[in-house]
Image 1 (cartoon, rainbow, N blue to C red):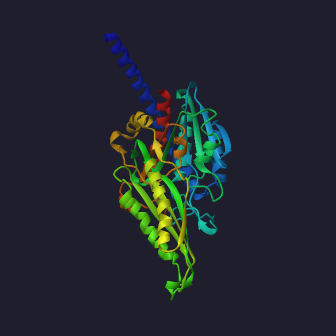
Image 2: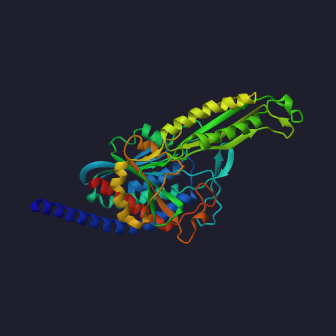
Length: 429
């Protein structure tokens, strides 16, 4: 018994020593690459590209990977880039993912690297901005590439770097994003055993990591309601079948699904109408109206129930108003679901790198992420990285997808350290 205990203690000491040595090297190499990460991020911020149009972003990444001697595959899912780094020792395959696309948002920040890029989106001229932090995700993964390429002798297996286009959604009529990357076998050749991804958060303190086992982000669906009524003069509403009044009743009715029918103690859910199109003049009751909105769910049984009730309710409410209405609901994005065993296994890594007090377990959010398509195929873990300056109150921090979105660049180094440590720890097990 004493011999067995001694062997275990010796093994534990060796493992801890190995881990500490790796951490010191990760810290040193991450510090050396930090200024480059900031420089790369600023370049990407100043030169944003919309979904499925990330041509120059891809070239920038490819040049970097080739310089490091990493095997590169281009044109995956239109503009995606995949790098492959084989360690000196045999082992499993782990993937790290960063999203590349920017948003149709006109930047208001007064920065030396402010985006002045303009483009066309849905037929309208718009500014283009990295208003969600994808520029930092790419830069952090480029930094991780560089650190791991210098630790090749410590890598027990293979690392696949996935630079993904169109996380914000492909243009109408196009495929894109994680779903298309999976379809084009990004998780194969070689087959990936696990995948990690991060998202920087403008409302979370720099130096902080946030995580959750199970569902961390919601499934997202888009719905469209088309209402047909009867046009009439605004002074004679009794001769009309008013689609605007019908639309108002449908909106109210849909909210009762959440407030009175969904079991919210189980998981949260949201139905939001974001677009109402109807009418052209004050004294004309129009013939038709359209509603477009989003559904967010964190449980698939609840999603099925909510979809069913919406499909039942919309035509029924319209009928009460003597109108007709149809509803179409998209398949949308799955729940971003953190594999429970993988997340529990890697939690000590997060705590070791950031400090246990800086790693916070959170409730699920109703935002959505197409990282979920990878997690449908293999175990995956997705977490949040702090990007808010410490002296800024969370309520004063500009939100994601807004013209004032801004990040504290001092938080990027923790992203590099964490992604590197997750990779090595996972492969060492």
